[in-house]
Image: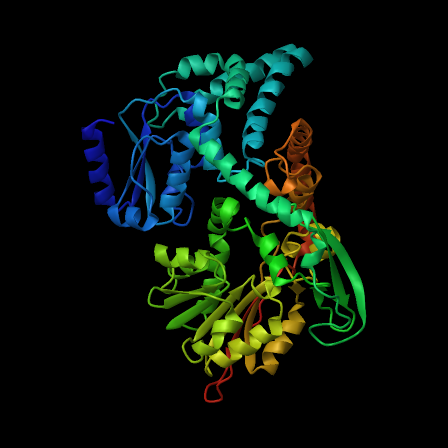
Amino acid sequence: MPDRVLRAAADHARRHGIGMLDLVPRDLPAEQALDLIRNVDPRAYREDRFGMGRGAGYAVLVDEEGMARSGIDPRGGLDAGEMGEATARVRLHVDTADMAVAPFPGTDRTAQRRAWLRSQALDPPPALTLPRTLYGTGGAWLLVLTGPLIELWTGLGLVLLYCLIPYLIFVGTPLRPADLHRAAWLRPVRTPLTIWRTLRAPRSRWERRQIERREEARARYAAEIAAGVERRLGERRPDCPWCGSLDLVRHLVARDTVQAKPGRFRLDRCRGCGHVFQNPRLTPEGLDFYDRDVCDGLGDLSAELIFSSAAEDCLRRARLAERFTAPRRWLDVGTGKGHFCRVARTVFPDTEFDGLDVGDGVEDAARRGWIDHAYRSSFLDVGPDLIGRYDMISMHRYLERTPDPLAELDLAAKILEPGGHLLIETPDPQCPMARLLRGLWPPYRPPRSLHMIPPGNLKRALEIRGFQILAEQRRGPRRGTDVASAAAALVDLIGPDAERPWQGAAPPGPARHVRALTAQLLAVPLVGLGMVADLLTLPLQRGSGDAYLLIARKIDDSRPVPAVAEP
C-alpha cells in the first residue's frame, strides 16, 4: 500500500467524518469484485448507519477512538478470514463507514476465497454461507451450460449474456478489473474452476481457529448431552401461570428451530385465557444450555448481523415512544448487545440510555458507547434498587423469555413513578401464521420462549397495575417472511450443519456431511417456495401481525391521558 494512497485516504476520511474506510483496489480481480457486490451495495454502505462491516479485504482505515474501543490489534499480516472478522467487529465501534476505490494493486486471492466468504457472512459454522454462494453461481452456470442443448440459439444467447454480465456490472464504476476481458469471455470455463479451487483450498489460519473453537465446544456438549437433555426440564404444572385455570390442553410439541439442539418441548394452552406456555418448563440450567452459542460464543457475529439488520424495527419502536414522551432516563430490559438503544439515540439524543441483561453482551454495549450504564443481572434481582430512577422502561421480545412475566410487570410498575412509560413488544400467539405454521412459526423460537401472551391478557394485566394503554401497534405482514423462515428452519432440522459441536461427540464424518449438503441443496427451492407462499398469504394477514407493540403510561391523575388506537 503506497504511503501517498494512505495519506490521501486518511485526508478523505477526516474531511467527510468517516470513522472507518475500506480501501478497494482499482484493478480488483473480477471474481473478487463480483463477490464484493454480492455482499454489499457500495452506494448504500455509508448511509446504513447500523449495518455490519464489509469490504474488499485489503486495507481498512479506522479512527483512533473506534480502534481503541474495538480492542482489535491494528496490525498487518491478517489472512482473509481474520480480515473479514476484524472488519465486521470494528464497524460496531464507529458511527460512519464507507468504501473508496484507490490506486493500488489487487492480487489473485482465490486460495483464501472460502475463508473470506465465510467471514463476510458472519457465520463461522458455515450452515448456509458457502453453499448458498456457490450454489447460486453454480446454478446459473449449469443453466447456461445446458441452455444450448435445449434450444440452440436461445441457449447461445444465454451464454453470451452470461459472459457480458461483468461488463454490465462494472460499467460506470471506478473499478477497472485487470482481468475483466479474460474473466468475462472465459466465464463459462472459469466458474467451475473457481468453485473447485474455493472448495479445495487449504484451510486458512482463521478457519483452523474456528475448527479449534468448535472442537473445544464439542467436548463440553458431548458430556452434557450424554447426561440427558430431559433433566433440564422442571416439573409439569397443572394450572395456567397467567390466570390459574386448570383447563389446559396440549398446544403443540416442538423441536429447537434455532440451533437444532436435541430435545422436544411441549407447549400447553389455557382454554380459559388463551395463554400459551412451555410445560414442563426449562430450568435455568436448561435455558443456559439452549441459549449458549446463540448470541455469544460461536454465534456471536451471526447474532450481530441479525440484530443490525433489525434497525427498522428498533426505529419503529422509538418513533412510537416519541409521540408520547421525551424521557430523561430510559432502561432497556433484555437489551442484549444494546442495538435498540443504539438506534433509539438517533430519535432521543438527549436521553440517557441504560441496558440490563444477564449476558455479557450488555457490557459490550457499554464499551461501544451504545448505552450509558450496564446492569448485568436479572431484572427481578436488581430491579428493587432502581425504583424511581427511570421515567421509561422498554421490554422488546423479552417477556416471553422470562419464567414469571407477571412478576416482571409488577416490578416495572414499582420502578416507574406516575407519568412514566412502559414500552413492550412481544409475539402474538393468536396471529394466523402461528396457527398455520405451528412449531415452525419463527417467534416461538422453541425452546427459548416460555410464554406466549395474547394481547388482551397483557393489556388487562397492565391496567390492573395502574397503567393506561396509550397505543397499540401491530408489526403487520409488510415483510411476509414467516413461511420462508419456517422453510429454512425445516431444512435445518432435516440436515443440520454437520460442523455444529452439539451434533455429535465425534468430528463429522462423510455421512453427516452428505446429509447436511443434501439439505442445503433443498434449501433454495424450499425457501423460494416459502417466499412465494408468503406473498400469496399476505391478503389473509391484513390487520394482524406476528407481534404487537404496546406503550402504556403509569396513571397520573393530575393530567389527562390521550387514548390512541392503531390497526
